[in-house]
Length: 495
Ligand code: NAD
Image 1 (cartoon, protein in one colour):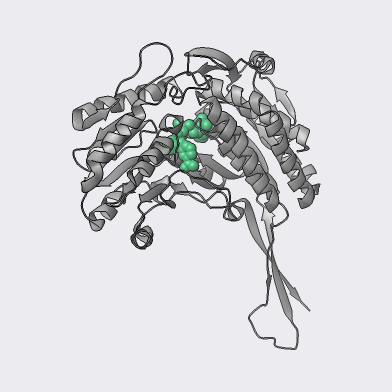
Image 2 (image 1 turned 120 degrees about the horizontal axis):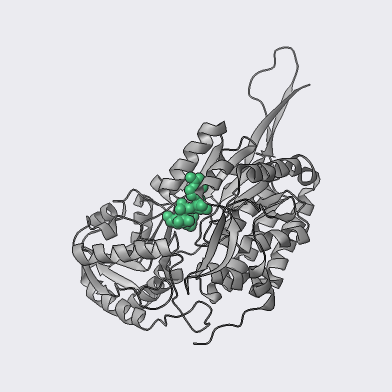
């Protein structure tokens, strides 16, 4: 095992005292409770953050309000786009440093941190930067008749909602943070982000780069802390919109808290129990490779990943055999080892949760491969495949958010649709087939925010993303996010 050497700048960053980033500066609340940041590869503490007090959260929101009414409002759409593009450049220029920090606190493979947390974040920033100059209303010809020869004209304006509170989970802490930061800034809002307490470090460095890119102090603040800090942020009266990504129970509490506090609007990107359907004509090599790369990437800790796999009965033995063989070849190892393909789970609580699902699978279903944690350091488990006894097996009903796929055979298209929709969630789904006529007939019947054909978990900034049913409310990406970050103002003129 050969690990990537730690950059001196990363070591120096870890040794800093970490707190919040408010009004363009790092701020340490000396009296606030310290929360340890743990490396999932070793279980060792690598740094600490502070659990923000209500007073620190108030400072952050006030600073964002000031910037919203002042510096950021005075920045032209063209300049906004230039600044966001510059932030993308700076992410790329500091790629290795950001990727190493993220890998150390999330357990994400260094490849993924480089390619997604940094690389894709830069791609998303550039995509969003283009929208800064395209936030427009429309002109309208009023419909009522004129009584005395007077005339009317009308137009709408898309105006930024104000200060946005962004709550971020631990699985893709930089990229999901960037989706929220970019959406807010290009529409003219300002933003206070609360990262997950498990992965709080990298966005602090991104905030510093944002200032270097030209984002005015206060337009993008960070408050760290646990759920209590998150709840205080979303219920602050200065916050006009909440954008939350995380689990369903927390999402419900966030939406309620925001609504009760100030009738604050909330968009929610929540969990999933995403089905993949392998039809009778499936290309087995393509589908198995697809499952390995989408269901087991980042140890399955991806909201959009497939967890329920329905395979036509005529093909299931072949698929299970190929998948088990493929998974056995994955090299498990430290996320800082460039040759490793599968690393640890992100934190100790999640490690316990996934091990519990192994126990449930042993009792209710059949484990085809994997199903054990690895002894030794850190939070490592095996990539696992389960064959369900029926659609009622727990492993087909609850979100694991880990490296377990659960299979069930099906016989007819009607049965398939009913199985795919038999879930409270509706984030993503996929069909694996070359029968496009069949795929196009099935797609409208699938209850999911995104349906892929012959791929899964493929996020493109131009394609709207979000869930139906318990998987959320609202959409990110494409032009769809604009409605959520702006208010429509109607103007009517008599002449
Ligand atoms: P979580 O709900 O436990 O926490 C998410 C964030 O909410 C964290 O920052 C946490 O500190 C904060 N939080 C906790 N309680 C809060 C409260 N009462 N008020 C305000 N904030 C609070 O989720 P997690 O364990 O970090 O992430 C895993 C979950 O996120 C999975 O269910 C996964 O499917 C989901 N997820 C969804 C998407 C998506 O786009 N739909 C993307 C990534 C993850």
